[in-house]
Image (cartoon, rainbow, N blue to C red; front, side, top):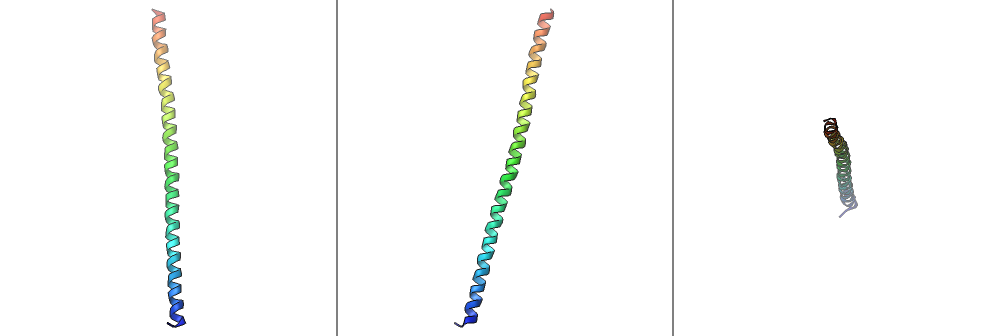
Length: 74
């Protein structure tokens, strides 16, 4: 083999390794994005659930207070 062919093969091998490294980087970046999106979604769901439970607890207290108020008035 002559040096030009060896250099050409090395160049192709280096380009293949660089392309593979870029693909790995892209996959990792997508996984990080997915994790961030899921994290934001989880936080939003937690906030909705938390606020919903606060309103449900307040409704329960209001209903109990109204029942006690009606019993005391009679």
